[in-house]
Image 1 (spheres, rainbow, N blue to C red):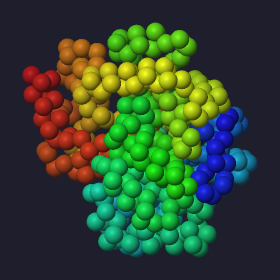
Image 2: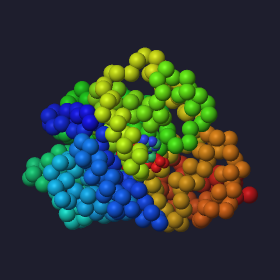
Image 3: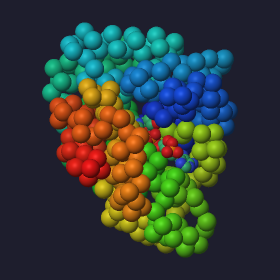
Length: 374
Ligand SMILES: NC(=O)c1ccc[n+]([C@@H]2O[C@H](COP(=O)([O-])OP(=O)(O)OC[C@H]3O[C@@H](n4cnc5c(N)ncnc54)[C@H](OP(=O)(O)O)[C@@H]3O)[C@@H](O)[C@H]2O)c1
C-alpha cells in the first residue's frame, strides 16, 4: 500500500481508504460477516483509513465498522465519521447524534466531518451552531481531526467553506467525469495548497464507471497501450493528483477490494503519461455525452421518500436506456419489477433537498412515469 501525508497534520494515511457506504448485502440486509471480513482484510493489507456515517445503511454501517475494529484492529486505523446537521431539530440534538455514533461504534472517532456541506444546508447549520459544536469537540479532544464533506454546486462556494474554519481535511467527490463540478480539480488544488488534506469520495462515480461499460468506451480502453480495467483507469486518474490524500472506494466484493488494493499499492502521483491522460479525457467526454443523469446511487434520497420509491433504481434504468440503447429492457423492468412505480411520486421534493447531485428528482419521476409506465 502507498501512503500519503494527511495535509498539515503530518499523519500518514493509506492511499486506499475503505468507504463503508456500500457494504455487501444479503437478503436486503448488510452482510455483517462478509463486511467484517473485508474491512479486516483491507486493514491487514495496509489500509488505515475507514469512513462511515450516521446515515449509511440506516446506522448499521457504524455498528458493523465498530465490530470490524474489535480484536486489535481499532489501533491500526483512523476512523472517520460524519455529523448530518439535517437530522437535528435543534442544537441539543447535535450531541445526541454524536453520542449515538459513539455507542454504535463502541469506540472513539478520529476524523469527524460535517456531512455534506452545500449551499442549501447552510441555514440549518448556522441555526444549530454546527461549526461551534464540532470545533468544541476538537478543542476538548473528543475528536482528533475536523473536516467536512462537500456536495455544493460551485467551486467558489467550496473555497468559501475552506476559508471559513480551521479545517484539518475535507472530502470531495472526484472522478474523471466530475472534474469540473462541485469542488472539482480546482477545489482539490485549492485545499491541497492550503495544507488541508483531501479525501476523495466516489472515485468510480459510485460504480458508474465500472461494471457494464458502453461499447464506445470499452473500445477506447481496448486501444490503450497498457491493458487496464475501467476501475484501474478511474482510480489511477484520481491517484495521479498529489493533492488527493486518500481515495475512498465503497467496495462491495472481496474481488473489488483486492483489485483496488493492487492498483493503489502502485499508483504514484503524476505517473500517467500525456497519452494516457488524453485517453481518459476522451472516455470522460464520451460518458458525459451519453449519460442522462449524474446519479451515483448513494441512496441519500431513500429515507426521505414518503412513498418509498426506489429512486436510484429508476434513475439507473433511465441511464441504462441512454448508455446502452435499451429502452425496452428498462421499460420491462419498471413495469414488472419496480414497486412503487415512478407515478407514485407526490412531488414533495424532500429527496431533492438531500440529493448530493442536485437532481430534479420529481421531474425525473414524472418523465419516467410518462415514458416507461405506458
Ligand atoms: N460524505 C458524503 O457525502 C459521501 C457521499 C458519497 C460517498 N461517501 C463516502 O465515500 C466512499 C466512496 O464512495 P463510493 O462508494 O461512491 O466509491 P466508488 O468507488 O466511486 O463506488 C463504489 C462502487 O464502485 C464499484 N467498484 C469499486 N471497486 C471496483 C472494482 N475494482 N471493479 C469494479 N467495480 C468496482 C462497485 O460498484 P458495484 O457495487 O455496482 O459493483 C462499488 O459499489 C463511500 O463508500 C462513503 O464512505 C461520502
